[in-house]
Length: 177
Image (cartoon, one colour):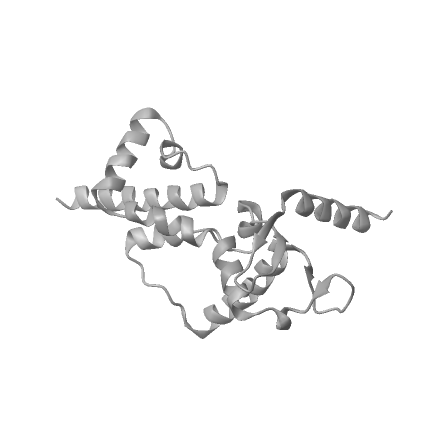
């Protein structure tokens, strides 16, 4: 076995071990895994959603950013769905991305990026609740995500970045007065 074949096999084995049954809106169940921090970082997509909200940043970025997002989402969905394999190359056990229902693709993207979980944590963005949590985390020498027992590494990083944005805002506000 060549190095490339061995590396590809190790990747497939890891994906299979991480995969769980996931019911899609179309009623189809696939084997899927969520991307980790390393995958997101390698694609320049660290989870900054909560941090941007905490800072009140508008979303957007123009047509180039939209095209980059579309390319990333295609890569993301192909990475997450372990079985059936998503591929533009025909073959047994493979599905062409053009044959996947739009609602399934939207669901997979939201699931992979922890959309529902991040939305539940959005109540902490900005405001006194996040400030209190940040101060308590500092007092106890823990990350804010640890104070809430957030176990998902991507969601924890997202939350901690949001907390960092709040700390920056707190510091800039206190230095202005």
